[in-house]
Length: 73
Length: 135
Image (tube, rainbow over all chains, first blue to last red; front, side, top):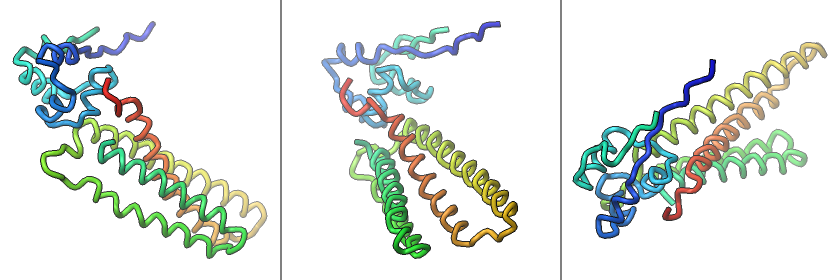
């Protein structure tokens, strides 16, 4: 029986940063309390943020978590 | 480079230097060359990289995750290698009906420490790969 692929999160943080007057990765990192490397890793899809971080990021952009992150199953 | 990356680089460089130093000095100094492992003491300065400076975030959830994975691999591999080499040494010397030299055990233990930190640092750095430049 073939293995079911693991679900993963995609996000549109980069697009939202662009819409937010070109907010820099460092500015977003400072706003949510992580390092800039974590924002880079998240945008490139190599890191899945915790629920707390996902909520903090969606609050910065003033939208729902589902509008920023999407679960691909 | 984040402070946790600096810690990983220090662990890797210091451990590899200690192994190279001991391996280089061993032919001339014999067991006394094990003193080269004292270089591992430099790892004691790594907490200095993690001290807070103003509002800078020094360690976040991803750093903690990377550190955990690197520690699992580093300590796991070093423990496995130590146990396997102990078994191999015991078998080798018991077949020859000789005692295991204590200096050999010393070399083994110290090199496991160095190997553990070198692997831990290398795995942490591998996980940070590609996240330094702005994407």
